[in-house]
Image (cartoon, rainbow, N blue to C red):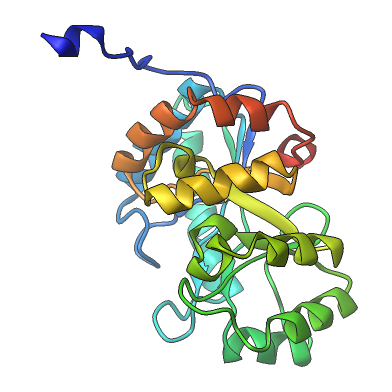
Length: 244
């Protein structure tokens, strides 16, 4: 009976004014994201229905688990673009990468190796979810020295950030940009992640919103997330997604 009074979730709620997604895993079979082109096309069709005009997909480059290279990623992107062109899906797609802050990334940075960036030389990176890397600040300095701007993926998901919002403020003061996952706003990952995301939003520390979509199940969460109070609040802040 009480279910009659639950808030109804729109079938295709709009993500407006956000038109560009900057974090997803839509290239089949190279990480923990989609595993077929058909799955990628189904998700992109759902994204288009929600109002996205462009997707920047970001496969993992985590050398111990997903040893992807720019060549592997761009080859998959080319095939996916061809398949999109054969459909009625009205969406553009490009690719960057989500780099894990490990020895491989440090080596690429120190040796000026090829890095997949997006927009104005933005480099998306993630860290361990448990412990803050001892070499975090040093590596960020080296990334800046290359003329790149580091973008920290989903800082709200890092346990070391939950009770240390000052770290997020310090990173932003250094010029690092923060990308929050939209699905964090429903408590999809945990209540603590949701609280941390809300703190980052309240302090105006967020520069990018990302879906971090891996599969169709995440699309369902995204639809709920797009109707939350904090999504609407964040969408009215000077987010950089639509500049890409």
